[in-house]
Length: 221
Image 1: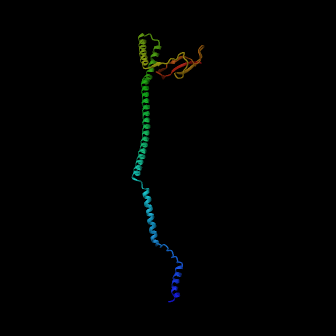
Image 2 (image 1 turned 90 degrees about the vertical axis):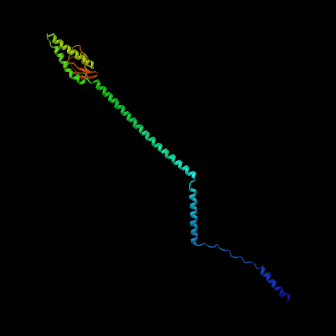
Image 3 (image 1 turned 60 degrees about the vertical axis):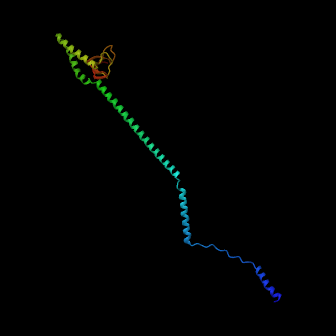
C-alpha cells in the first residue's frame, strides 16, 4: 500500500473530528393527563382547607379562655338582671310603704275627726231642748219651783254639752261674721257701727271649731 492510501483514512478521521457536534434536542416535559391535574388541584385545595382549619381551630388554652370569657359575660348579664329586679322591687316597696303610711294617716285623721265630733248629731238634737228651756224661763211665772226646775235642767245640760266641746257662739255687739251668723234683718242704730250684731234672735252653737247651728241675728246698717 502506498503512503497516500495509508494517510487517507487518517485524514478522514480528522475531518470527522473537526465536524461540530450537533446539539441534542431539548426534551419537553411530559404533559400530564387532565384528570390527573384536576385530582392534584383538588388534593391541594383540601390540603389548604385542612391547613386553614387547623390554623383557625383554637388551642385548648384559647378555648378555655373563651369559655371563661363567655361565662363571665353570662354572669355579668345575670348580675345586671338581678340589679334591675332589685331596683324594681325597691321601687314597689317604697310605693307600698308610702301607700300604707298615707292610709294609716288618713285612718288616724278620720278616727280623730270622728272622736272629735262624735257629739255632733246628739248636740244638734239637744239644741231645741235648750231653746225650749230658755223660752220657758223667759215667761213670767210666780211658781218658784217651776222656774228652779227649768234653771237646773238648763244649767246641767249646758254644762254637759260644754264638757264635750259644745259652746254658744258669742255674737252680740260683735262684727257680723257670715261663717257663724245668719242675718235675719237689719236696722239703723245711732252710734253703732254698720255691720254690728245688735240683737240675737236665736242662739248659735259650735262644736269645738265646727259650726253646729248659725246664730240668727239682727245687724246694724
